[in-house]
Amino acid sequence: MRELTVKAGESGQRLDKYLAKYLKEAPKSFLYKMLRKKNITLNGRKADGSEKLQAEDCVRLFLAEETLEKFMGTQTEAHTCSLDVIYEDDHVLFINKPVGMLSQKADKKDISLVEYLTGYLLEKGALTREDLLTFHPSVCNRLDRNTSGIVAAGKTMAGLQTLSGAFKDRSLHKYYLALAAGSVEHPSYIKGYLWKNERTNKVTVTREPKKDALPIETRMRPLSYSGTGDCTLLEVELLTGRTHQIRSHLASIGHPIIGDAKYGSREVNEAYRKKYRVTSQLLHAWRIEMPSFEGELSYLSGLKLTAELPALFKKVIKGEKL
Image (cartoon, rainbow, N blue to C red; front, side, top):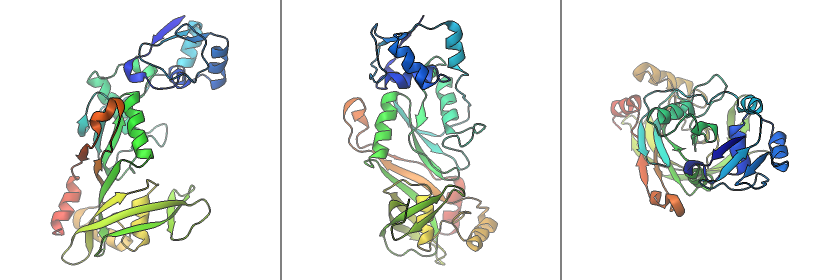
């Protein structure tokens, strides 16, 4: 028999989710069977898996050690690197992700911000290997590999649930800086429909509804223009968070982001590659503004955070006298 005590950072999740992390190689059918037969109990009583766990709850596993070892699998992967942490407390942290880093794995062999986050928390003692058996810190929003800027992450279940909820219900405001080709003279609010080609991982924006297309909304305002009119620095508010939304939406109105190989202008990109060595889109998740929260994370209400621009982005802005 193995006894597990739920920690404060793990509370708030369903029992079946908790068990699936601890016995990550076990089929769900096995877990539910063990619950029905009372081979897994919660606080000494039969459970069905839907129960919300609280700190100090006792989960008992009446399973053989060989069975436990078989279904626990390998330990969670962790890597270390120097992370640019903008804000951190006991429940959440916000990281300024660099260009070139994945937010989450796209393939098993990938190393993403999640693995670096895990390594960071292990290294500073905010997390233990034992904790990883039943809780995995994770990011709450994703940026494209070559988009830099703010990524929110949860260090506890309460942090993950609160931030993920704010991103999902759009109560958290997200602002980006983008260097767009051409002269954008007026603020605008643009709507459309985004359809994703799963085979090519490329999206198309249309003004009219299309089968399987999702509605998108983007608000933008010009901050400054180059003297030649070749580019405009835009503040973009992302009202809906779809795949490649800002990149494809700006391209659809004739102002693609400079350096964007997928949606941009080959001629413009080549010019900026030669002049500044730009090889990826100049798009940065710049600022977030928190909504009003209730409960344990109410102290985050109204918090505003900004992420410093990458050196290359600043170099181009300076060179273009923006």
